[in-house]
Image 1 (spheres, rainbow, N blue to C red):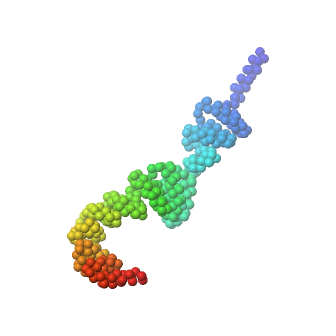
Image 2 (image 1 turned 30 degrees about the horizontal axis):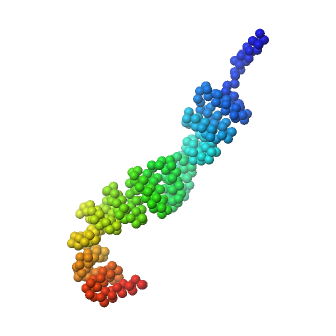
Image 3 (image 1 turned 45 degrees about the vertical axis):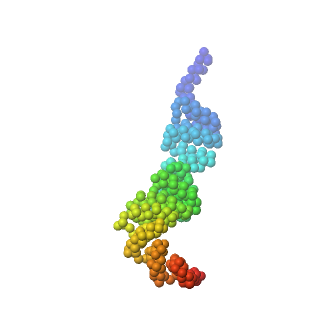
Length: 386
């Protein structure tokens, strides 16, 4: 009977005062510094239902024990249940930082509301610095924003652009590589990488990046590729890209076609040069395009058409260069008397024109006037020694 009354009194006390629940016990143990026991109690309380707050407390206990891996996992569970749980976001950032995962820690921090407020404050400051042309201030502010928002690709691209303008190609490249880790197929990042690598004289790598940007739809890469292949002494490939650029453009089409034709000529691709020039409507042809046409026809030994084209050129713009081309065509066609006349007229206007002197002396040699040829070459030699 005595045991019955003892049991009844305990039951009544438990009913009146309430037994300590696992979660409450976990809180008490945590405050007492008994973190392992607290974790056990919190995990026990999960049997009543999954809850973000419980996972947060488990994570905090693991963090106090120095078990940052387990803490990170528990903070992530809390955030899965409650994405806007800022205490868990901060705890996750601290755990990741303790594990040396700085980039991931910064990403976790970037979603905190006070960080977002800082971003909203910084953006107008960057705009002011931009209006003032203060690149150093822009770079400093954008660097801070990148640290606050490491997953913000647009901010990183702006930072890389400003570093390129400041001449810091290595710094720009470092930022762009972090962008490509986040978004491997970002065409703007590949294009800017190409610009940075070109400035560092890493031309092959620059061309590879520009090719990727082009494949991803970035048409600006065409011009960069054309410039790169000129620097790599591959004018024919450069001409191919300029031709593609001309097909994409209406505003500068004639200018681009002329440039492509010149590059094909530089690469001794005379037929390709002529095909490009033919694409230019007759009414839109300039003295430059007609001169290129005459040069290509001359090199292809089509002298009659070459002469016809150069005469049109001279009618449009009677320049020394056009006269030289005409004299060269006449010389190559074996019409030496006419060529001689042209070269002499050129030398009256420009006495030390090297091309005219050499070709005129060649005419003198062919026609047996060796002393005249020797005298002419001596004139050129003495001028070059000055």
